[in-house]
Length: 257
Ligand SMILES: Nc1ncnc2c1ncn2[C@@H]1O[C@H](COP(=O)(O)OP(=O)(O)OP(=O)(O)O)[C@@H](O)[C@H]1O
Image (cartoon, rainbow, N blue to C red; front, side, top):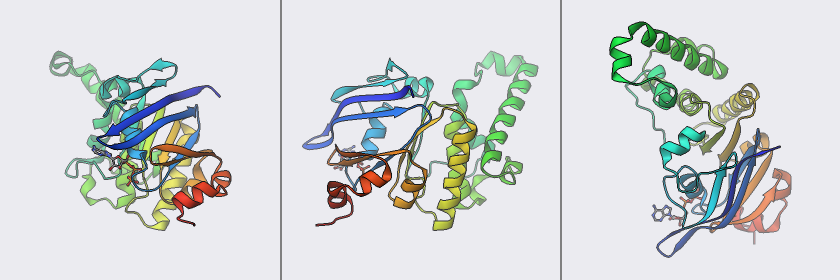
C-alpha cells in the first residue's frame, strides 16, 4: 500500500523536555494505526506537529509524497489532514449541521459577492452541503441524521463524538487523526462508536486513521498496526498482539516490573 503519511526523525523539545525524539512514523493508505503510550509520552505533540500547530525542531513530514514539515495548519488541512480532539470542541448552541459545516470551509465558495448576489448558486451549494453532511451522519446513525437542525447541546456524549468525527470528515481528508475518541464515554458507547468508525472506514475508501487511545480493547479491535511511544521515542511497533507481548511495552505502559 502507498504511504499517506511519512514522518522521519521528528524531534520536538519544550524547554528541557524532549516530547518527540527522532520519531519515524508511517501510515499506509486505508490503514488504522493505533498510537499508544503512557501519559506525557508525546502522542498529542505528534498530532500537533503533524497538523502544524507546533513546528518540529528537526525531522520531516510528508503527505502523499509532498513535504508539509513547516506548512501552516490551514495548508495541512487543505492538503488532507483532519483531526478530532481529546476535549469536545463543539459549539453547543449551534445545530448539528452548523457544527459539521465548520469543518467544511475548503469546499465552500465563500466570497461575499457569491453569497449576496448569486442567490441560486448559493442555494444549490447550501443544499449540496446539507445533503453531504446528512449522508455522513447517516453512516453513524440514521435517526440522528433526521435531526440536523437541532442544537448539539441536547445530544448525549456519543452523538457529540459522532458529530465531531463528521466535522473532521466533511472535508474528505486522506488522513484522520483521532485523539482519544472514547474519552468520557461508557463502555457500550465506546463499543458502538468503534463499530461506527469501522463502518466509516469501509465506506470512505482509502481513508487512513491514526487513533490515540488508552482503552486497549479499542486498540485491539480496530487497528491494523500499533506504534508505542515512551518519552517521545518509539519503543515498539507491530500488530496489537505483537506489541502486547513486548516486554518493553509491558514495562512502560502496563507498569510491569
Ligand atoms: N505546550 C507545551 N509546553 C510545554 N511542555 C509541553 C507542551 N506540550 C506538551 N508538553 C510536554 O511534552 C511531553 C509530551 O506531552 P504530550 O501531551 O504530547 O503527551 P501525551 O502522550 O499526549 O500525554 P496524554 O496521554 O496525557 O495526553 C510532556 O512532558 C508534556 O508535559
